[in-house]
Length: 130
Image (tube, rainbow, N blue to C red; front, side):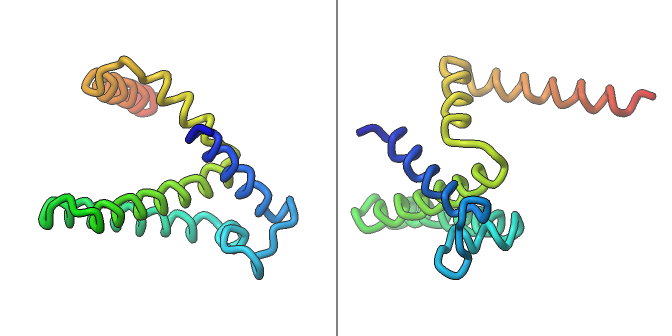
C-alpha cells in the first residue's frame, strides 16, 4: 500500500461526508466542518500550520527526541487532513496536488519561485493597463 492510496482513501471518506453525499454534521466532524463552510476549515488549517511550526521549533530547542518528532508528525497529519477537507470542498483531490508536485519535480525551487513572481507581475501589469 502506498501513501497515495492512503491519501485517496481518506479523500474518498471526506467526499462521502459532504452534505450532497449524506454527510451528517451531527455525526461527523468532517461533515460539520464542511457544513460550517470555508471559514471553519480554513481556520483549522491556519491553526494546524501554526502548531506544525511550533512542534518543529520544539525539536530545534529540545533536540530530535522521539516524543518531539512524534508531535511534529501528528501536527503535520492534522495539517494534511484539514487541507484534504479544503481540497474536497473546492472540488480538488490529492491527485491534483501530486500532479503539481510531479510537474515541479526536477525544477529548481529558486527558478520556480522566480517564474511565479514574473507571472504574477505580468498578470498585475495587464490588470493595471486599461
